[in-house]
Image (cartoon, rainbow, N blue to C red; front, side, top):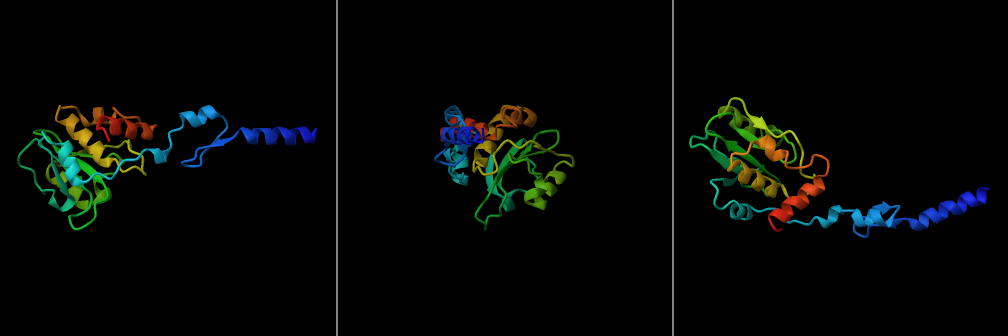
Amino acid sequence: MEGSDTESTMDDREDLIACRECGLVFAHYQGLEDHTCRKKIDSPPMSGEALEGILRGTSAVVCCADDLPAYVRDRPKTYVVNTDNCNQEGTHWGAFHFPISGPPEFFDSLRGTPDTYQHRFRNVLIVNGPQYLFSRCQIQPEYSETCGLYCAYYVKMRCQSIKMADIVNDFSSDDLDANDRKLIALFSF
């Protein structure tokens, strides 16, 4: 009886198939066919110039963290801000929206609070608030470099007066890879 169990186990192992890109192992070929390998989502980091191109036709300003003004007079105004200062490489994009009336907003596709990146971000929101809103749902995979696309989508939707909560609800909170694919297809990357 033990021999048949051993043979059965060996037969099961022969049915296993692995993704050549990431090494993830599947029990059935259908699993491999349905698999979306993380390495297949290939999108270059978004430069400030690329973001400006995507946002052409909007009033959004693309800048680094230390160029974000402390007080915003002319409203509505939206900024896509790199979380690093101008003298740094640039690691992540977030967006600030200052409506004509109501609290200012901070949008981050990774669900970071404003002071996750710089205490100054929170201070800017308080000076222009004092109450403010920020996105609380992660919609971008942590290993992905598509934060600029999420910010571009946010800006384009806010320009149409769509609320931040509704923008975030356009995305899955479970299948973050699908969110990336959606934006890459939308912006033709």
